[in-house]
Image (cartoon, rainbow, N blue to C red):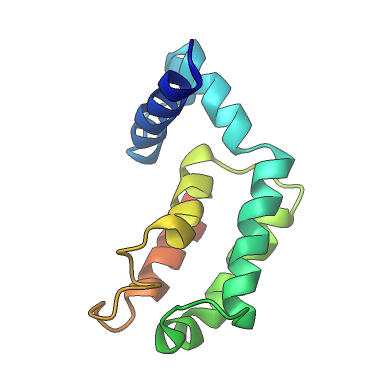
Length: 125
C-alpha cells in the first residue's frame, strides 16, 4: 500500500475510533489503536500539551489556555502515566493540538470551549 493510502486509511480509522468504535472489532482498528496508545505517541501528545501550557511562542488563545491550565496539566500527566489509556482519549487529546479551527486557536471560540475539550479527552482516557 502507498504512503498516501496509509494516511487516508489512518484518518478513516481515527474517525471511527474517535466516534467510539471498538478496536477489537477489526484487526486494522486494533493495530491503529495500539499505535495511538503506544508510549511514543502518548509522550508526543503530552509534550505538545505541555508546550501549549508554557506558551512556547505558539499563536494560541491565551485566555482559553489560562482557564484550562489545570486540566491540560492533568491530561499531559495522564498521557505520561503507565496506566492503560483508550485510543479515543489519545485521539481527542491530539485533536486539541491539531485542530486549527478548535478552541485552542479559533478567535471566535466560546468561553470555556477548550476546558470542555480537555475534560472530554480526560474522561475518554
